[in-house]
Length: 323
Image 1 (tube, one colour):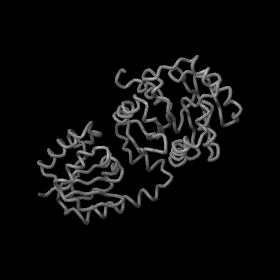
Image 2: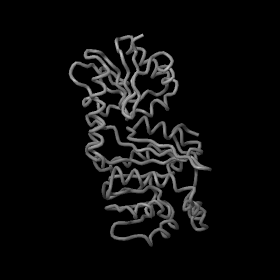
Image 3: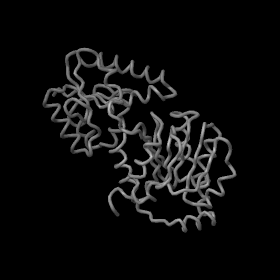
Image 4: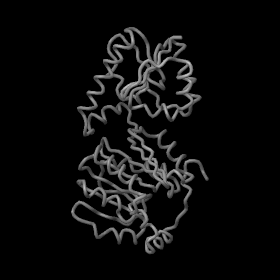
């Protein structure tokens, strides 16, 4: 398998045969409910009443779940004529199904959310497929990606996407028989911080600001003025929580600017130690980056084994680096 590419080669003829025989009807079963519910939840929370493009829509199961909550427009595309024929009975003035190859399809408009639900490992080049749809995102638009973790390519595709895009949220869903990872991504745009995305689009704007205010007060109470600290926040609210007198260093950083996520634990530990030796007295994890503590488990263990954790709540995790 070529790194970063899909590993399931399926011809159009096979898709047609499978849909004609109802081989994908199991997706309506209870075992599939959990990850569909997460997808619908993300859309309704982040893009309520928005426009949706569903890549590899099949018979339109996601559309059925979304219809209960409502949307301004839904377009589902699938390579299978049989799948689209079965889905077409659900069409109305807001809902369209199109038989097309996703690697060649060109929408005539932009969308608030583009969904890749368990489809990326079927493309020869999953990353290029996602990239070509960037132009069809509305400003502040989102990609929602669901991956079935038992597929060999899923972990590679996920890591590559996380290196190319900013992750707003990520959840792992496990039931009695299956596990999926669902992720919300936005393109990395120079000069457009993620916190601006949330302010512009979150349905819970006031709660976000309240969390920021409380985090700011907690940092002010905990860290003496004039001290340098490392701030791990995915560059989402550094300007909001840093009051005058503090020197907050983004992590990772290059020339004082946020430089994205570390590729591995070794890099995280090395860069952390470099900043600590340069004078950082604390490291602060903001809630947008809490997933780091699980994903970079060796880095987290390094912190816990060597430094005192002085705060842990729903907003902040703080370690005192003064030995």
